[in-house]
Each structure stands twice: as structure tokens, then as C-alpha cells.
Image (cartoon, rainbow, N blue to C red; front, side, top):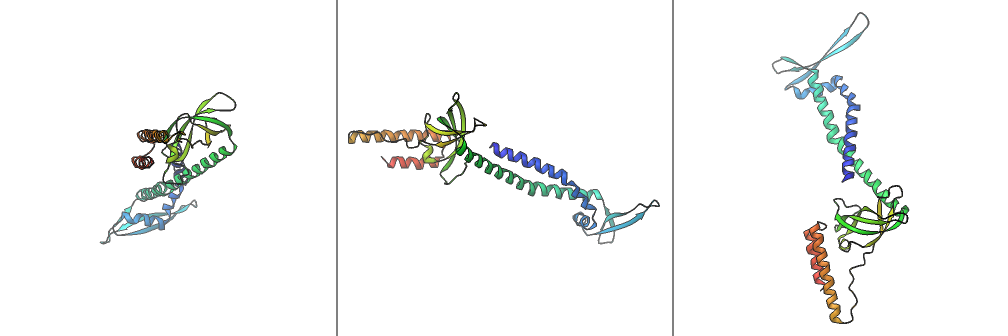
Length: 263
């Protein structure tokens, strides 16, 4: 979400800059052909351009341009330059904010997203290796690098145990399949890489998602009891994820059916 608002702010500032810097194009209103087109919607009939050349004894000369609205009865009414300029300014500003601004915003957002992915990949490869413990998980509004409709974005709060220094807390944005998300529990150990320049920036590099295994049993009855207890634990965890908003009602029902079918 921060990346979205950052791109939004940048695009607005860039469009404002273009609006001011390129405002000189409004001077094209002085070109008779362009002024006549802009004046046409202001006149119910035809528009004519009247050019009057003038010169001064000191050598100065120029041309006065008037736009006239000629009615069907032959009566002509002058159209003020201010009206034409205002219409040109409306088209100019409208084009910038309805066409150019969305393009700048999209370019800023996706370039920023690509830069974020590149930084994360570099962190996974070049960061300082460490271990961490999961403190809490919450659903993210953004899902990065989703490869399946069942992938979800997760914000994972971690307690980092760096190789040099005291433990500290940080957060990592990750994308997980909903099945793997169910296996995340507070206290689980994971491997991370730490950004040496910004230690609160971490990326998870290794997971221990093989948990939730059924304990070994010495008899069929004990094995069945252990399996039932394991499935009940899964259902309880699934309900907690639903209440926390980590999964939707449809995902809850689908996973519940899968769990019950294994009994």
C-alpha cells in the first residue's frame, strides 16, 4: 500500500510539473487555424477569421486577429480571445490529467514494483544469513509473484536472531499457497537474509513447512486417535485463520472438506 501511495504522489507531482512547463503550448491559440477550431463549438453557425495588419512609423508591425461568429441572418458577433483561451486550457489540462497522468502513474507503479522484486531477489542471494522465529501473521492487501489463484499475500512478523547483535523484530512480505499458510504457527523457525544497510529489511529464504505430521503410534487405535487429534487441530487453526481474515469463507469451506475427508 505504501508503494501505491508513493507512485500516486510521484505521478501527481510529475503531471503538475508538465502542466506548468508545457503551458506555453497554449500560445498556439494565436494560430488562426487552431483558434478557429477551438472557437467553432462557441458559435452555432460558421466562424470566420479577420486578420488586420498594422505598422508603426518606428518600424513595428503586426497582425490583429479577430474571430467572428456569423449567424444565418448575416449578423456577426465577435468571439473573445479569453473564451477561446479558456477552452484551449480545458482541453490541455483535461488531456494531461485524463491521459498522461494515468500513464505516468502506471509506469511509476510497475517500475517501482520491478525494482522491489529485484531488490528482494538480491537480498535473498546476497543478504546476511540468520535465523528467525515467527511471531505473528496477517493477510496482506497485495500478493507478489502470485502463481496460483490460491496464493495469498502474507505479512509475517519475525523475531530475528542475527549472527552479530541482539535479537530484534522485523516484518517480511511473502506470497504463500493457502495450504502452506495453514502450516505457519507462532514459534516456527525460518531462515532469513538480512539487508546489511537496512537491518529491518529481511527476506525469508528457507521454510519448515513439513509440520503437522501425525505422531507415530504403536497400535491402530492410538494411530487413529492421533490422526483425529491432528485433524481437529487443523480445523481449529483453519477457523482461527478465517476469524483473522487470512482466508475467505470459500477457502475455509474447501479446506474443511479436505480435512474431514481424510478422517
